[in-house]
Amino acid sequence: MSTYILGHTNPDSDSIIGAISLAYLKNQLAEDCIAARQGEISPETKFILEKFGGKLPLLKTSYAGEKVYIVDTTDLAILPKDILKATVLGVVDHHKLGDLTTSTPLECWIRPVGCSNTIIKEMFDFYSVKIPKELAGMMMCAILSDTVIFKSPTCTKADTKAVKELAKIASIEDYKKLGMEMFIVKSAVGDATARELTTRDYKEFDMGSHKIGVGQLEVVDLSVFDDKKEMLFEDMKKLKEQNNLHGVIILLTDIMIEGSQLLVVSDDESIIEKAFNKKLENHEMWLEGVLSRKKQIIPFLQPLF
Ligand code: MG
Ligand code: MG
Ligand code: MG
Image (cartoon, rainbow, N blue to C red; front, side, top):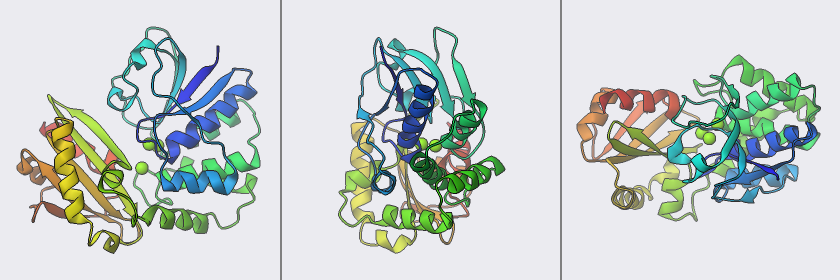
């Protein structure tokens, strides 16, 4: 029986490429593994797969009775509903420890670095397994995405080291240029529906007895949202009702000037104002220097709930 490797819902490039790269490594180690995904891929991930000829992981959302490895999260809120009925053989992640529990011992690779693929790169080194050229390119892009081309406060020396080594294997000289190309693809929001945008990189977090949805859109120029904010707010309100949330926050992140415009729909806006020590104006606030949801947003909200 094959083991499935999956990342979180609304998969980002790290979750998709992480499933692919870990499946490759495990297969080299004679463990029969299949890369899976929990949802549609983003235009950014599509760009990476096309650039390096990567295969789209299998769409699979139910895992009762299966053996799995999980990458890029340990939060039940963004894992398949029946994940506790699967046997979790291992976890590779770079987030806060979530609420996933297991009934058997597991292989655990969790470290405070910028990207799961950085840890997977280290796993390849640990097991002395060679990374194929195309796979190296994909892993490198995943790290550049998660670390916002090294600008994110989540980026560590381990991430920059991994990118440099992977770039060498992939024969890519100007990896920052490729990173920018990728973020330009990510910035194209023209044709997307409101729901596609609010949920493109969206996670729900349990905070006390409440649930908060936090989405993020990283672009190279915030003006692409000038005529979209109204539509985003409308959809955030719908999302809040549909998922019975205390609030929905969307971070419109400008990776060039390095900061985020927060759009807020909440039962209690004062909590958001308190968390960031700033007043909302028309349900919006600008947070200078904020690029990371997990490091600069979530830890400030959690204690207030
Ligand atoms: Mg992720
Ligand atoms: Mg990640
Ligand atoms: Mg991200």
